[in-house]
Amino acid sequence: MVAIVATVLVATGCHVKQPYEPTPPTEAAKALEVLKSLPSFEDTKTQVQAAMDEITAAASQLIPSITWETPHDGSVETCHRRPYEQTNARGYLLPDEVAENVDVSEQNWAKIQEVAKEAAAKLDATEMQVMKDQPRNHDVGFYGPTGLFIKVGYAGNLVVSGYTGCRLPRDKK
Image (cartoon, rainbow, N blue to C red; front, side, top):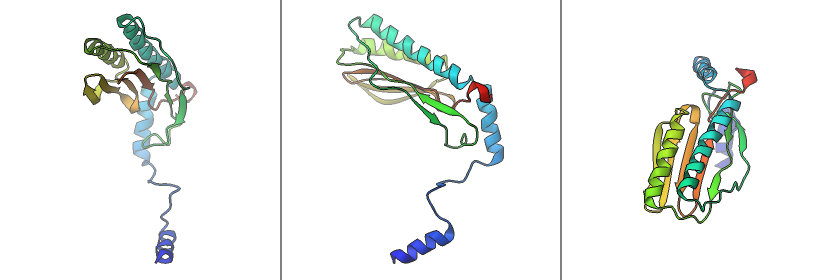
């Protein structure tokens, strides 16, 4: 039976090298135009970092005992997902900013979340998604064009995250 299924899969061209059809040319062209209208990869990376810095600075003002750490490096990706796989776009997941074992009151959480909302809005990341919203257990993201996001979370540790979304490098615009 396994041999029959394997033969059918090989004969019909079903394989895992290309799990989906490429984006149709007209859709890919539209995606490229959208990317050209947005800030470059490099500029967006700077803007996302500035938004994260704004959030961490506000949290530090509210809770002066906070110490921020960056537990890992950021990571670059090529945007191989539809509809950007034909565009030379890149994305960057910035290093998380983490304040470990910090006491964030619900009142301060509301202020931090509001600063995050305002900082994210400067990047057109206005679609808010709440994953968790319970006392001392929060996870909120603000999403924008081409996958860009700013996220804040708290469950004993306060975490600020950011991602550029897919963007064209300056030399590809």
